[in-house]
Length: 107
Image (cartoon, rainbow, N blue to C red; front, top):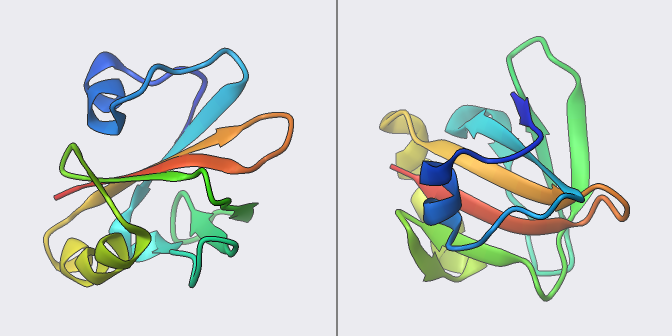
């Protein structure tokens, strides 16, 4: 589901404040492919039959696991367990550049 502004609980999870020029997706763990590096792309769908979206990550993209800052590598490692435990990703991106500003996983 695309969100124009994140609810307070998700903002706390990201450890950030939503900017007026940012949007977010809330995605089940089985519907996201995390980037392979800090200059890659995240690929996601909001449902099994929904359109696929691709957004670039940058060196400034923030990664959060259960509310704590983490690295892309640790987030990727946790993603396998996330699919089994009904984990949910939040992907926050800049509307103008479409670059990802944050990816958070809540298990």
